[in-house]
Image (cartoon, rainbow, N blue to C red; front, side, top):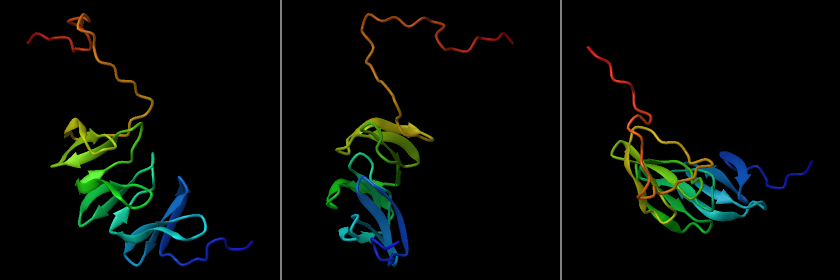
Length: 143
């Protein structure tokens, strides 16, 4: 076979959403399928694109960029997960919550861990809905 992209990176990952994450020296960036830099390596760390955004780290803080390298969510989080169904888990002060694609906190960081949304459906309870007193509550034990 013939090389489509000449081997030249310290590390390279599979293409996702048309771009591959690559390391040059100690910095990470993204190339297209011709090997041309779509986003010049300048990040301390990066994750592949998911739902049009990639998590990137600069000076120990994580944010999200679009496919042009423009920050959509400025680096301000201790850690992040990929976007899934429009939300990404983020860590703030040791607790995890969720943001939307604008960086707005949707679920306040309050959990010890958080995973990606998968096939979730969230509905607001109707004001007339009643929750039974015994719904998912442990039985009381007498001592």
